[in-house]
Image (cartoon, rainbow, N blue to C red; front, side, top):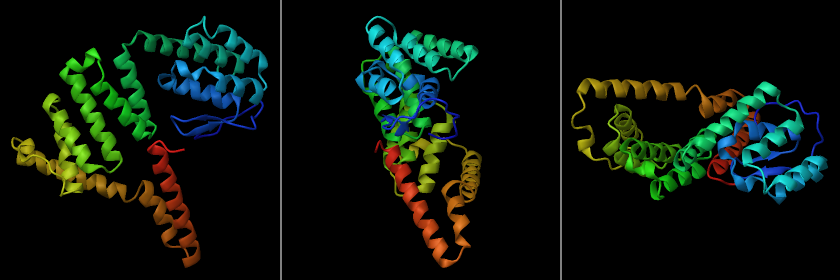
Length: 273
């Protein structure tokens, strides 16, 4: 997990692995943090034997394990998650109230809207393969929201952005072309224009840009140039630049470690363990 948590509880010898995000939880505070900040990702299957054993045996919280087992078939998921947060004591009363309100809001959402919120969160967490699956399920499933052109266009746009984050340019373009049929927003076609600049061989129908004013295309080009220039001084490019002025041995070792880390990040984004 990113960041630092002050942990007072027992640390488990065997972590609880959250496959959806590719993270391992070792303490009660880490479990609380995961629940509190990822409520849309948590489904009924979260409360199961693996979690019970982690809480009881791993964290030494046998009483909490007994509560969860006893109430598993009687209480709502939101209530049981609150029980976990309350027993671990990592969040105060105001924060628990906010969590309860968030869970209530999720409960009031339609299944389609809840799945969309989950897909958006997976995308924000860099879990692109899982996000792609969720967006695709919304497009293919029997959700009433699919009849709304705005909702359907948003799904196609989100799928396109997910594919782009995985450097699947043709797939991204195809999804954005579908999005343009329902979403009449300049951002969709600007994204397609950027893909054309990045990957000129990608097939995009010329009529997509037929009614775009030359001045708008010029603005898109200028925006693309700014983004490209900014990318050279941030992210992976900036990480690599740190090592370029080192001596040969340290530069080689540093770059090897960067490549290893980047590969691991990419593997995780695709749902790898």
